[in-house]
Length: 309
Image (cartoon, rainbow, N blue to C red; front, side, top):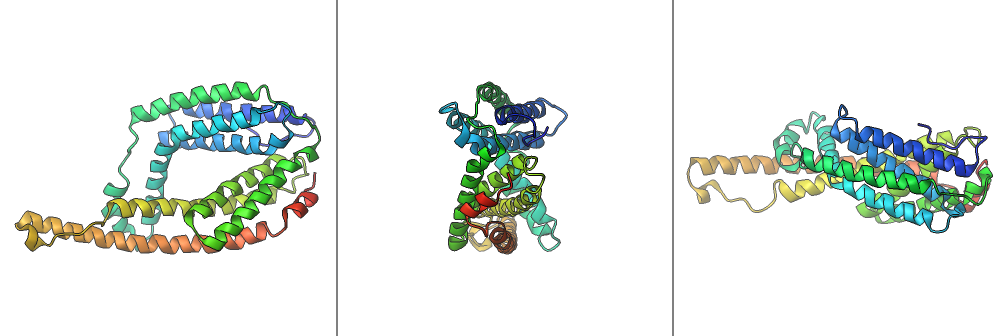
């Protein structure tokens, strides 16, 4: 699968080819029973995001009326079918990553059963979701077949690139000014699209955008790690070490005393984990700020003029 435009093909043909390749790869993964369900979910979600990035890039040049908006709505709807199971997968992965730290390994083990059960999405429920996603992607594949573009020069893709660059820069400023989790996550979404655009255009500019694609990916992964930690902390607050604990004397009996000790130990583990998560979040924020300011230092108008297409 080649997620990029090629020299020598029309932009419309390139967009349709890319969409077919991305969708066919996703469909192949979804039907591969040898692949872990978590990986199949991830591959399908990644394909949907890549397709939305493609639509965002070519949208300003579309000659087929409202088709880009229709495609984006369909892709957004399809992504939601996998959102719950993917969130649970990420939660378990993030907890496992935090648990690899020697200082928090025991604490993560203590609360793991409560904040990240083995699999909240049953096998049957996930399979049903896979079936619906395959149906939706097959329809979206057909819709992409009708896509036509007005222009046919590499520079005709500049408007879509500049629009996403501008949105990335704008969201960065808001995220760094507020430091709110929601704003950092919205910035991450646009950085991902910007990285996709740099990759899609890398063949058309002689490869000079490849480095920008890689830097965008690094930044997006940092912001993604921050978001995953936010979700883990929220789950921790919701289910572990919360609420007022009764003393062993109030409860009475040896069993109640043991339960109270266990609850106290869990609450202490949750508190230590929470502190560790917040430190990791702050580290990710600082590095993301450094990378983001370098990546989006230029105004959007200048970035468009400097785009080597």
